[in-house]
Length: 151
Ligand SMILES: [Fe+2]
Ligand SMILES: [Fe+2]
Image (spheres, rainbow, N blue to C red):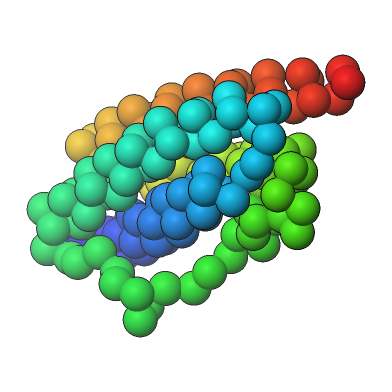
């Protein structure tokens, strides 16, 4: 028996990861300037990690006899991650990334709780692993934000 709250959260997390990949990729291309280089490199590395998260979530859904959503089921939500008007506005991208990571952290915390309640330790373990990646992303971008607020 599949727990619906668990599979709904897995599907939500999958969609969020895909939206994150799209917005990190776009921002990594759009940003300009010497001071943007580090942030662009970090985004490029994170794109691969977020894509890996989506793959793992999709495989877990399959193991639970469900399917990950495709583009027709997709609802875009990352308003603050839309690329800034000004291509050198790195701080705007940093803040958008922090919003996305906070949101992901909350989703994985909810998934951990739901999986624990549903006695689904495999999903719980996956959510814990991904949560630790998202917390590492947040730490990195908090560091970028501190650097930008200094100047
Ligand atoms: Fe992720
Ligand atoms: Fe992340």
